[in-house]
Structure formats: C-alpha cells, structure tokens
Image 1 (tube, each protein chain N blue to C red):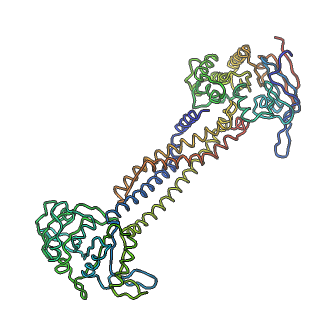
Image 2 (cartoon, each protein chain N blue to C red):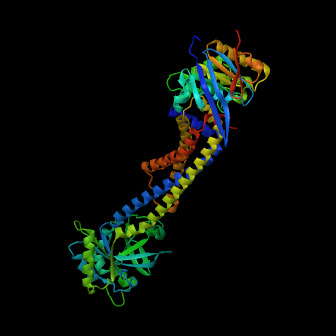
Length: 409
Length: 231
C-alpha cells in the first residue's frame, strides 16, 4: 500500500471520530505549544542578553565601594570609603582606560510648573554618555567645563519629557530638582526597559559637581566623593586582564594589605547581565521539562486511543488481512493514523505556540524570538512522539491472527 | 484427472490446544479440487469444515500433512507470501458481509486492490466493472447501511472479484439472507463459476448446496461423503 494512500485513509479515520481525535490531540497540542513557547523564550532571552551587553558596553568595568563576599564575613555595600574624583583622574591616566566616568545617584522629586514627578537623578560627567553610547536626540549633553564649574543644566530622558512636560518642547525650560532649579539642555534617545523592568528613560542627568554640591550633598568624611565609577577598557586590551589589573591598582591605592579582602567591587557588565539571565535560563529549563512531560503525556494519550482503535477495529484488520494486506500494510496504516493525529496536533500546537509567544512577549515582558528552526523542531517533536507511541499499537495490530481477528465480536 | 488440482490436501490434520485439552479439528484429510469446480462443503458445526476453509483460505497452517493451493505448499510460505496469495488467488465472501461501514460500495470493492503489489491496475475502473457485473452499477456511492442485505452481499462478491481471483471462498454467504435473495446470490455464484472461477461454498442448507456440482460432507474431522452430481 502506498504511503500517501495510508495517510489519506488515516485522515478519513481522524474525521470519522472528530471529537475523540481532538481530545487525543490535546496533549500533543499543549506539548508542542509549550515546546515552542519555551524555545522562543530561550532564543529571545539570549538575543536580549546579547543586545544588553552591547548596549551597556561589553568592555565596561564598573567599580563600587563595599566588599565582595569572599569566604567569611562580608561588610555591607557602602560601608567602605567611597571613591573620589582623585580616583577618577588616576584611573583616567591608566593605559587601558579608554574613558572613565564617575557617578552619584539619588531619588528626587522634579517639579516643572504645576507638575511634579518622582524620578531618579544621576550626577555624572560627559564621559558617561560615551561609555553608555547614549546620545541626545534634541539639544546637547554638558561640556567638561560645565561639569567642572557645576553648571545648573540637565539632560533628560524621554519619560521625563512625557511626564513633566506633557510632550511639549522642554529645551530651555526649567526644572526644580529637590527645589534646585536646573535648565534642560538636551533630551536623550529612548532606551526602553532594563532587564529588571525599570524604565531607563525615567532619569535626569546633571553634572557631578552640581549634584553633589547642591542636591545630594557630599560624603561626611570624604569630600568630592563618587559612588560609582565606570571604566571603558580601551580597544586592544583584554577585559579580564584589565579587570585584574584594575583590582590590583585599586587595592594599592586604597592601601589594602596582601591577603586582605577588597573593600570595593569590580565587575563587568557582561558577567552581571549573564548572572541576571541565569534566572531566565532556569525558567527555560523548567519549561523545557514541563514541555517534555506534556509531550510524553500527550504521547501516552495517543497510544491509549490507538490501542482502543486497534481493539475496536479488530474485525476490520482481520478482513484486510484476508483481502491480502501484509502485516507491514497494517503497521503502516496504524502508524499513519498516529502520525496524522500527532502531526495535526503539532500544527495546531505550533499555531498556538506562535500566539502564546506573541502574547507572552506583549504582556509578560518576555522577549520572544521564533525562528523557522524552532517551528521545525516543534513539529519534529510531534512526529517523533507519533512514531514512538504509535509503534506499539501498530505492531499489535500487525501481529493479529487473521482468523481470530475475523471472528472477533 | 486430466488437470492438476487447484487445491490439494494430503493427510492434513489440525489440532487446536484449548487449555490442557487437545481438539482434533481435522484428522487426516485427503482432498483434490479441480480448477473450475463448484464445491459445497457441508456438515454440522464442529465437523471441521470451517477449519478446512481457513486452510484453503491460506489463513491458517495445517498441524501436519501438506496443503497446496495452485501447487504452492502453505507450510513453506512466509506470511507475506500468504498475504499475496490471498490477494491474488483468493476471494472471500462472508456470512456477515464484512463491509467497511464508513466506505461506499465503490471504496469497499477497491479495498483489496490497495494491497495488490505486482500488477498495475486501474483500481477505479476495475471496481466499477465488478459492481456492474453484480448488478450494482447504479449504487456505487451508497454506503452499506443504505443497501439491503442482498445488495451488501453483492458488494462483497464484487470485492472478492476485484483482484481477478481463481478461487472464491464463500462461507455461509446466504446465512443472513431470505430465501428469495439467497437464490439470487447463488445464481450469481453459479454464473461466476461458469466464467471459470473455482468456487468453494460452506453451508449447512441443503437447498443452497444444491447449486454446487460437488458436495462434500464432513463429520468429526473426516470426510464422510464426497459426491459429484452429473451435470
């Protein structure tokens, strides 16, 4: 019997008992849809991480005061002496430092006219924009001179424009940040959500000195303090080596004895994002496991209904054998039915997977990427399940004794 | 005996094991059926006639002895060869018709042609031809449920004919039909026999057996009588 004929009659058999066929397929549908969603999620997360790493600067090292947890007891972040502007200058002189930026951060209330808005303030220098590859779409960023003199100027993110200026042109307008007036000189391009789900465009950026002297206030023992330093490693230097050298250099500067714990942290953004994404990876493994279980259960369902079908059609099988069907013909017929069941379930599952991925991407904030390979793998999984779980019932049908089968009531 | 027999049994026995009990269904049968014969096999139930039918139908193997169909010894054939033998040489007609309920008459008749391996036949044309032959040319697209018992048995006969068999095995073909319809079906079988097909009929109705040229009576696994009617 030709395979195409077997498939055609399998489709007929599927339609002959539509409700049962659908219920049987349900497990496969769910399984395939979850395989697909899971893989789309994994791909999406990977794409997102790559994008974030490149957006944050793959070659950026971030320094924060506080101790790394290394064995024993660790001190809380911030307990250690903060960095200073002197550190910035010293670091900038290092050969592997392409650009160095210092930052102070605070939560503030910004007021414009009658509108007020709680947002975050970053006090920094002009190098910040270079390191973050973040450019103004309107106006300009502040100059080194404005940073030095502590000018009352601000560069704002897109969300500030929307919430404080209701979308009207903010250039030249004044904002009072914790009652300190600054004038808007630039609007930054949109960055969207961070991997934490926070709005990266909801920020007011002003010169470091302005922030320290007029809004946040200096550290009580360390004037000219900086809470965070970012170093962009210059082209041609290895990030890991630069990180190690930087740690040694800072230990030296901060007079830490050999064997003593660091009282600061140096991490690179790539490590940081990867650690974050480990959560997503765990989630992915969990989903993969669930998808496998769903497919397995679906397959058992298919096997069950195929066994029922073989029993119900024992006489038909006997008849076909009497008419000259070989064991292999019967085998092909029932395998074809299992395949059609699982294949159809697979197609529906893929469709649902597309829809599910799209909804998850829209509402859940998950990144989704569906590629042709994912679709093929999902369908392939359904076909493999069909063959695997269809084999046993098909073999049972093929091995029936024709006389007993013909007499079966 | 001018012609080689189309069916030949030599000391054929068949023993079934039921639990720890052995049932001797056939106790050493010698039988020859010539091509073109119309033979009725009769006997009470348990006499061994169904067992012989299964052997002639290449659905079963003898416990001992030699069973040959067209010179091929069943015990030397592999299952696939037996399937091909059933497909090409034999046509089955059953008491309960055994039609596929979801398929129409034409599809039912085409069924054995699906399993035909060696010939290239136009299955559709052949099935139509067979249905015309049994007088159902007008009802090819009817399903079994839309046909009378006699019509269903005609579809079954057309199906048996589709593969151009040399032998038709009819197991109580009139058992589920009324007297008038039975006679029609038997006349159809007679006309097929006249066209050269060997027919073997199992029945317990003497008036049905009257249509055959030769009557073989079974009792307790042995042939009790074997009579040829002068035609």
